[in-house]
Length: 217
Length: 217
DNA sequence: ATAACCAATCTTGTATACAAGATTTTCTTG
DNA sequence: CAAGAAAATCTTGTATACAAGATTGGTTAT
Image (cartoon, rainbow over all chains, first blue to last red; front, side, top):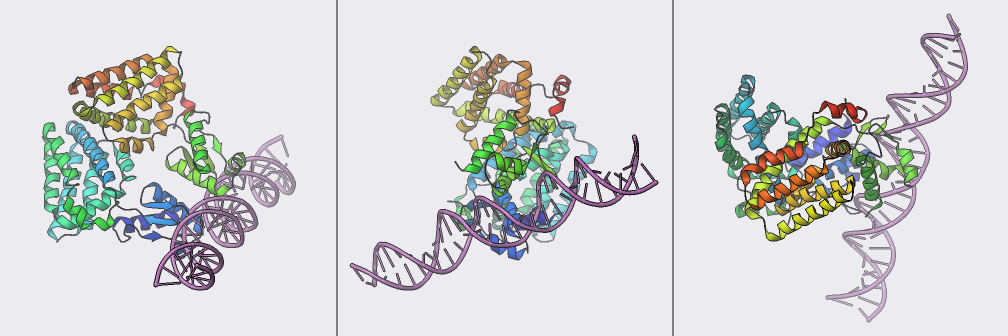
């Protein structure tokens, strides 16, 4: 992997895990010293981060880590629940045995993580793996990747939400149910379930009060 | 608008209208002379164009206008038909009188364009205006903008397709029908119609033979 | 003490020289 | 004449000096 791609992944990871908090200033000169590289390639990285809403660039002022935009979170969940409802219906009529096996294996590993105490990072990675597998099995990985490019706000929201509520077991059970509904081709019930699964309680005032320092006004 | 934004819009327009054909080389030095600006800001523009798939960058070789990727066209139409089916259902239960009026006005103007002989550019702009208005009225303009960022292949495909078939009248009638179904809250029939409206015949071999020089292999 | 102004010092934005890889052309050699 | 190697000339990639706007701190005048 190129040096620029490495730097970008590093910064993305730090932003997504909130090691770099919203509002943090990302100075070009400071970063060029940290990564021992000149400002030019670093600016390329910062420009791309801004395009994917990881940061905001204020001309002649600075690059800062973006605040979490709940509007974006709501729009992305609407997009995903609509899309995944359709994808799951498609899969109900197509899903091969190898696909079912793959999904079950992911659920197995997720259950292990729950057993070992709450390793949120591992759990979320497997959560993404499950949903991504659904897209791939339906021939829609292209759309999964497209959504990822606009996913900063949703991913950080989800992480904070999970830190607060710790309902890993409930999410796991919903995954299990989705898989069963697919296998039994019960397309009617899939819609409401995926809707509830993705939407969680975005608008809870409780959440907004707890994490107001991270949120866009 | 900033000078960089102007340059980007100019280049985007030239690529979308196929004035710049797929495969055309965009040299940094040539463009910097054309726009009387140094390579640095020009590189910013080219980088963003590449991120939105208008171009491909081959390191140390050059920037070239991307070939139309029919896979991307198919994925975007799936995304749009799924999403707009849901949006139209939402609107059936919400749509205000002012919204209906706005949509009818767009259809009026589109009918005029058809009457005056086939001005494809004006027709397509109004086509976008109609669909965009649907998103906006449903509170989903965010998603319209998101899709636009991945729309190069679809937009060029649609233009070529229209040059070839000249069925503007048919598209207009489908718009009219969609609006009527919404007003009468006939949500059952919306799904199949929006699907047909957006998908057209992507996989027609005829199309691929006619425009193979523009297509990704 | 306070307010206004100015200067120093941040920030990113731009221009340009040079580096390094890819291609094309030319020249040499069989 | 043909083929291969070498050199010249393309391309983008990187480093850096300088430009210009924004902020901050201090100084001065009231």
